[in-house]
Length: 169
Image (cartoon, rainbow, N blue to C red; front, top):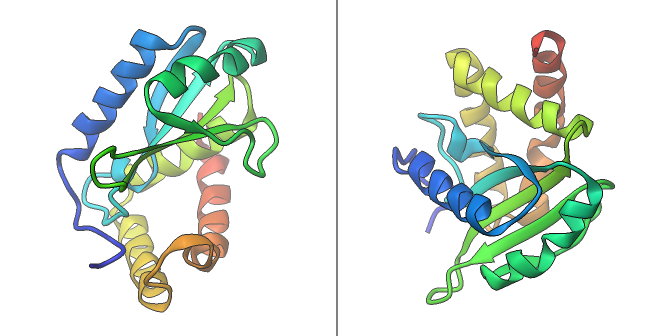
């Protein structure tokens, strides 16, 4: 099985469904954005939906834990990134990872960074093609994914994000 899946036009609908569940069961949300490669039409991706929930304040973000755990999410805390609340959801039947959610309090700089990169990829076919090539090369070198796959892409992503941030509103 390949690390990367072909682009799936159903990913946005899946993300919307997960976002709807967050809005229905979690208080204090300002927005739930679909980010990452599954949010970019035509981009191959690990078939895991990335969400970017935005909370009104830190108290609301921290208070969300019981509701998220009731929805089946595993609460990971900051998981190495200050200001983030990271949760993930696994398929109960298969154990496959379905969702990564990187939650922040409104105004956190990482919100803008994630949205700028997503929107730049959506708007620029050459950037999408370059990222597809980077992802394929890294997946070939690190077919099990994980930290090695992420590290392989990180320099390219950092440069692309910095450029996207220059013009993002």
